[in-house]
Structures are given as C-alpha cells and as structure tokens.
Image (cartoon, rainbow, N blue to C red; front, side):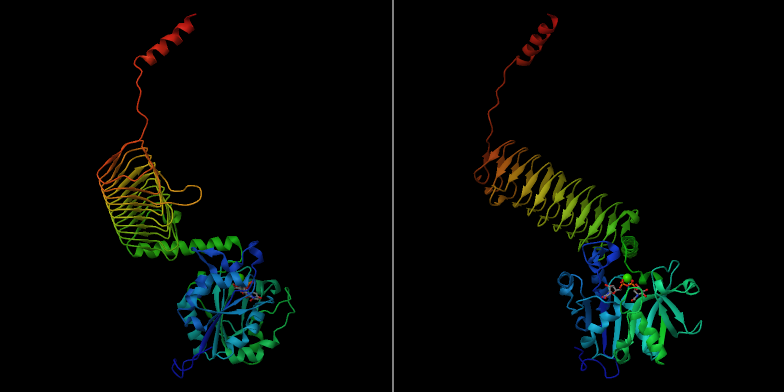
Amino acid sequence: MPKANNQTPRAPRTAIAILAAGKGTRLKSKHPKVLHEVGGKPLLAHVIAAATKVVPAEDVFAIIGHEAERVRSTVAATGVGFVLQQEQRGTGHALMVAREALAPYDLVIALSGDAPLITSQTIEQLRDFHLSKKAAMTLLTAHLGNPSGYGRIVRKNAGQADVKAIVEQKNLTPAQQKIREINAGFYAFDAKALFDRIDKLGTDNHHGEFYLTDMAAILAKAKQRVVAVQASNAHEVLGGNTRAELSEIDQHMRLAKCRQLMDQGVTILFPQTCVIDNDVEVGADTVIEPSVQLRGTTRVGSDTRIGSYSVILSCDIGDNVLVQTGCVLEHSVIKARASLGPYSHLRPGCEVCEEAHIGNFVELKKTRVGKGSKANHLTYLGDTEVGEKVNVGAGTITCNYDGVNKHKTIIEDGVFVGSDSILIAPLRIGKGAYVAAATTVTEDVPPDSLALGRARQIVKEGWAKQKREKAQAQKAK
Ligand code: UD1
Ligand code: CA
C-alpha cells in the first residue's frame, strides 16, 4: 500500500506494475518466459532492478500467473509485491486483476516483464513526460528498422505528442503496415483514468484477449489525453518473445557490460567472445583473454590475468592473481598473487591463499590451501586443510570419502608430501613432516617425522638382457 506521509504532498504516489504472468508460447519452453535468462539473470530480475531504482520495492507489483510459485520464489528476495493473474486473458486483464493493489496510487507505470534492457532513466523519462503533459496515458515508443511483431502507434497529427490508437500487428491495415513507430509496452497511467475505464476493454480481436493497448483509443475517444514519448535508446524496448530475440538481447547486454568494464580500466581481448554476467565486478588493469566466462557474482581484483577458456562462477579473486588457460572455478576465494592453472578445477567452497600455486589438472573441493603452498600437478584434494608453505607432490590423492561419509585431511605448515601419495582421511600430517613418494598414509603423522609406506624395491640384475637374448634365440630357430 502507498505511504502518503513519506512523500511530499505534491509528488504523485507512484506504483510500478510489471506484467509477468504470460507463458511465453513462442519460446517453446517448459520454463516460464520471464525466468529465461539474459546477461546471466532472469528477464524479470532485470526489470525489477530498473523499477526499484525509481520507486521503493514495496510500490512495485509483479503480476504473475503461469508457474506463479516458481516466478515468485525466484525474485522474492527483491522485496516486491505480487498479484496473481490466475488465468492469463491478456495485458489489459493483467491490470484489471491488479486493480485493488494499484487503484490507491495516483500514478501507475506498467512495464513488460519480458523487456529487460529498460533502464531507470527511461522509466523516469516516461513518468516525467506524462506528468508534464498532464496526460491520462503516456506510452513509450521507438522507431525500429524491423517493427514486425510490435503494436504500431497511430498519432493524431504527425509531429504531435497526441496518440489516437495503438494497432496490434495482426490488425494493421496496409497503410498502417508502413508505420515504423512501435509500442514499447511501457506505459504511465493516471490511476483514476485507467480504472474508471478499464472495464471498457473488450476481447474482439485476433487472440480473444483484453489488450492493454486498446486503452489508448478508449481514453482518446473519451477526450482524455493520450501521448507518446520516444525512448532515447531504441534498443531498450526490445522484448524477448523468441529464442532469437533473447539471444539478441543477451549479446546487447554483454557487449554493454564489456564496454562498461573497459571504461573502468579493464583490458578485454576480443570482447565479442567473452561472456560476462551483469553483476560481475573487475578491477583496473586486469586482463581478460579471449573466450573467458565470468558469471554470477564473480569479483576480480586489479592487475589480475584471466586466461582463455576459463569459466568462473561466483568467485572472489584478488589482485595480481594469474588464472591460466582453461580453469573452471566455482564459488571459491582466490587471494592476491596466487596462481592457478592451466586446467585447474576448483569446486565450491575452496580458498586459495596468497602466493599459493595450483597447477595442471589439480582438482580441489572444500579445501583451503595456505599461503605460499603448492599443488602443481595432477592432484585431488577434497575436504582438506593445507597449511602454509606446504608442497603437495604430483599425483597426490586424498581419499576423503569412504562410501558413506566424507572425512577431513589436515596437512600442517611446512609439510612435504611426495609424489603419488595416497592420503586416507581422516588424517593429520603434523608440522614439518615428510611423506615419502608413493606412500599410502592411513594413520596420523607426527610433526617433523617421515612417513614411508611402500613395497621395498627388488632388483634382478641382468634380467632384461636375458629376456632379450631368449627372444632373439627363439626368432633365429
Ligand atoms: C505487447 C503489446 C504490443 C507491444 C509489445 C512490446 C499488447 C496487446 N501488445 O505485445 O503492442 O508492441 O508488447 O513488447 O499488449 N502478460 C501478462 N498477462 C497476460 C498476457 C501477458 O502478464 O494475460 C505479460 C507477459 O508475460 C509479458 C507482457 O505481459 O511479459 C507482454 O505480453 P506479450 O504476450 O509478450 O505481448 P506482445 O505480443 O509482445
Ligand atoms: Ca513481448
């Protein structure tokens, strides 16, 4: 509900309704349209982010219907309100069912939940134009090279703000087909004007639905002012009705993200090949090589280098880190001056401390590697704590899982683990101890001692020579 007392008396109480109940038939998907992702986030999450920059979350209402519970739980953390449109009978019907939530406001802004490039500045532009014209309804428009699929704007007189009607694609007359000015699907309404006449919407159209767009002609005929304002960036209005449109929007968003990072001092080689999600942060003088993915809430510090083909999901990477080619890193922390790769795999819950080295074909899971420690080749460390200045030799494997439970391995500071060692958890290797190469360690190793557990070598002198000679004699027969 609107709060009258925290706004100045003259400022109209403003609600934003986001239309998000539709199924998205054209996507041919089992998932609801507004949960399809661009820039690494659901369509609806982008629209909510723009809306909540204009009004508080409590004045934003998402109108949900198809798979309502899934949609609600995906964006519930934003704090917006929800209105259920049980049956989806059109964009006009969506506002009819939201009447109770919206009618107490002075101004209702309606946004399409499937058009995620909209910015808060454009919503404000729409609102301010609406208020300056004292209109009953204001719509945002754009001129598109290919306007097909969008409703077209029929102006009262060319060059004037006033609008006579919006005509949907399927109802265009041959003359109207030439109109390039399209309806973006973003509107500002005087709440009273909207709800006084919304019941006049009918379903006499191609889809048998209540079209919100018909409000333009209904209000114009009732001598209420209907005006249109052009979006300053035409691409902001793009809606994702098809997979191809979603991909176009995604590319737009990601290139814009790369440009923003470059403006902040990040070098991105071949940005067209990089996939960087909207919420990612990168510090200045970091270099991102071609074909890198930075996803989720990843943060990268300054002076770091991220090698080609690395895929990084929601990690926190410090300054002066080197991530070489082909690393896969998830939900982990990598501290300053550490080095990873090529081809390291950090599964969730890892921490690689300052100056640590994790090398080729090394997999870590829920593992902390202390400052200056190294695991450079062909190693698996799971549920392990590695202290400082530890050397983990090539081919070391922790056996953390006994088929039922996971167990911890603790390797204290300064330990040297020889190559090809098998560490059977639960296990503690004390400070400064040595594990001889190829040892299977089953019991705790006290500090400063040597653990050695492998079959003693047998040497049979001359054995190979004899074997060769025997084979040659056989051949000569
Ligand atoms: C709509 C407009 C069209 C405009 C275009 C801009 C209508 C009739 N047409 O067409 O003029 O050019 O947007 O993108 O409005 N929705 C509901 N409940 C419903 C039906 C739809 O919440 O009963 C939601 C959808 O989930 C979607 C939004 O409303 O987020 C727009 O609906 P959609 O079917 O995509 O409309 P368009 O055909 O794109
Ligand atoms: Ca649409």
